[in-house]
Amino acid sequence: MVATPDDGAAAGFSSGLSVAEFAACLAMGLEPVGLVQGFCAMQIGNYAMGLTQMGQPVGGQGGYVENYQCPHGMVGGEHRMWGQNYEQTWMEQAWSGGFTAALDRMRDEATRLGAHGVVGVLDTETSLAGAGVIEFHVRGTAVRVTSTSSPSAPWTTYLAGQRLVKLFESGFVPVSVVAAVASVRVYAYCITEYLMGGGGLTMWSPSSSSVEIEQLVRAQSLSRDIVRSLARSQLHGDDLHAARLDVVDREHERGDLEVWSTLRGNRVRRFRAIEALPTPQPTVRLT
Image (cartoon, rainbow, N blue to C red; front, side):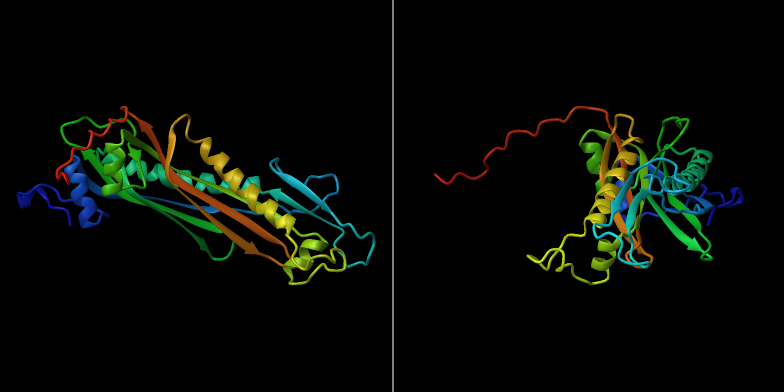
């Protein structure tokens, strides 16, 4: 509830912080001024994808591509003679556009409140109507530093409470939240299809019944590498703090799947050198 001028009281505020986080903000000189949020609904369409033996997926727009060739020769019409991993760059760009739009709208709300920053940021994405539509929701608590003019653009951070206090004590200040997505599509070739279906390859590798699924390993590894590179490109020389990497496999059929990696963290910048801790002094002597 916000007080009106007739109440004879200062205007109220809203906050998404816990009691401990709220107290930590006040102790740092950060005054919460309001709960702010931003939304974006993004339709992320799929290209009419197909495989080509020239090494590029139909509709592809650059990025990682790797082909896999069947080692058996012509076996039958249902046999998968070759497969492919490729990065779905258009989906990465659409996701980034939706997230950035929601983040910018949250910042706009914070700016209108005269905030210096937004702490305790939370972001969620929800699929709507099963039609490739994703709703992005970004929210946090806008704060300002008392007796200081507001900056042109508020900073943002996932951190709040003691974690934010320790960041300042370590000589760093938050700049912005960082989020990136990497999507790698796997079209399985014959060996990957057999192994993902629970079948063995003892007829081709009789010395062992345990076989590494190379195509899937490559897709998982490259998805993680790509998302780290995308997040690094947003830092512009700053550091990434409290990063969290989430990986989800979205299965299709016959060994086909999509590896979706999301990396979130805090872009931070050093504002002073680390102060050395004082030399410990003994308080009890044993001799």
